[in-house]
Amino acid sequence: MNELEAKNRISELREQLTKYNEAYYEKDAPLVEDYEYDMLMKELAALEEAYPQFITEDSPSRRVGGTAAAAFAPVHHARPLLSLENAFNENDIAAFFTRLVKSGIEAPVFTVEPKMDGLTIAVTYRNGRFVSAATRGDGVTGENVTANAAAIKAIPELLTEEIPVLTVRGEVYMPKRNFAELNTEREDNGEPAFANPRNAAAGSLRQLDPHVTASRRLEVFFYDVIEGGDFLGQDQMLERLASLGLPVNEERRRASDLSGIMAYIGEMTERRHDLPYDIDGMVIKLDDIRARDEIGATAKYPRWAIAYKFSPERAETVVENIVIGVGRTGALTPAAELKPVFLAGSTISRATLHNEDNVRDKDIRIGDHVLIQKAGDVIPEVVMSLPEKRDGTEREFVMPAFCPVCGNAAVRPEGEAVRRCLNVDCPARLYESLIHFASKKAMDIDGMGQGVIRKLLDAGLLTDIVSIYHLRREKVAELGGFGDLSADNLLKAVEASKERPLSCLLFALGIRHVGERAGKVLASSF
Ligand code: IVH
Figure 1 (cartoon, protein in one colour):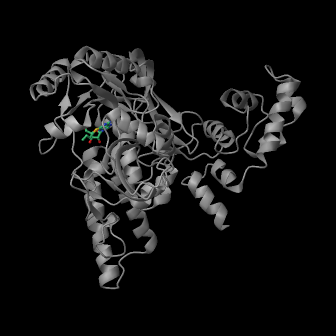
Figure 2: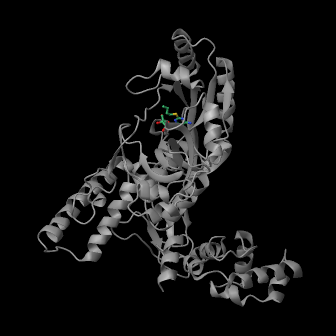
Figure 3: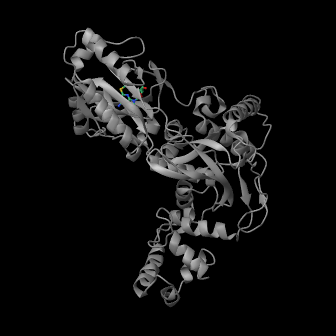
């Protein structure tokens, strides 16, 4: 589904659900069964989560039981949360520097920080205790996300001191690794993937159910004080926040001239891909907080800070082939095999194409020149094809109606983006299911990784999940690469997995829609 289709589907769903709501709540005359209503609501929520740009406060997904009570009540910020002016090159930063000197700051000292690509949050503590949290909104009025923020472990409930009032501003973000895992899980479940960690963080914070927020493992860095506390400099303020127990980014540097600023920006441009989180630029701040107050702000931006934005990194390459991967739920996912190209810190030879609609919408053909980028700096994806470079030898991709591994029918149910192999005994599904079953968050069978599973399958020692528990030590020890000791260790790990809690077993079984959290809910209620 592309952005336009998502937008249309969202408005269609809203219209339908509003009609059903009226019938149910105002006329007491339901038009549909609860189940159908729930499914439509779920579809709407998933789309709004993946495309937060289309979220509106009057959406049926934001209303609780017929009333127009917005899910997130408006909050007036104690001080406007200003945005930052952008700089795109050294000249822009030089101009910023000159402006500061002209306004009377003689020898400015700066703190240069990574610009986190997340979602702004303002968190208030009273007497050292977490009391509320709000999104930035339009800067003047945000949304009350207290319940969800309380579910984020990285936001401490208590500070180390009982200071009367402290409101801090920071950025909630999703680490790259969590983002990659979340998207794999969503694609497995046929849910729309998030475009980047920023969208994923925003979607996870603006949730009706705080348990969902909790399960998304968000992190936060604080970088400003809105209310409470009097500081001399940025660096000193950050140290103070850290000593109060608030997460601050240790990655920052002081600089006292343009060349110092540019040197750090140059270094971070190189290093950004090695960071565990996404950054989209660097923020350059006048360190002296008293001086900041003197030079003030325009209606939108402070005059004492500027954001240097990295240019998005893309690379051109050629699609040599389009191949199909089969996931554990049978989902067929097309991927482009690419002429290897270096991009954002690594060599890329394969990129996901998400699903057949995406290939069609972007008109990506085998042999095409394409632009690729990394979603959230991690997952390579094809942004667009370059049709002007075609020479007529390119071939259109046709999604197979059969599983490329087992040859059974692959079916795409109406309304779903994903085509699935329906054969529960498909070898590709079995292989992926075993990997999932043995993985850390599932049954955590140490030593049973991809290579070992492949070997055990090829030797016929594994035939299904249950066969893991019938493995015989002598048989395993006979396999190439295994000795008595490693066979012993593997069987010990299998034995130990029997102690895993029921919730992990439920998750490990790989039932569609039963993720880690659903596993816990099911285990605790049964
Ligand atoms: S300072 C009044 N520092 O970038 C100064 N902002 O494009 C407030 N951001 O709205 C901003 N990392 O949400 C600051 N280290 C950082 C930041 C940061 C990310 C965000 C912030 C702001 C946006 C501006």
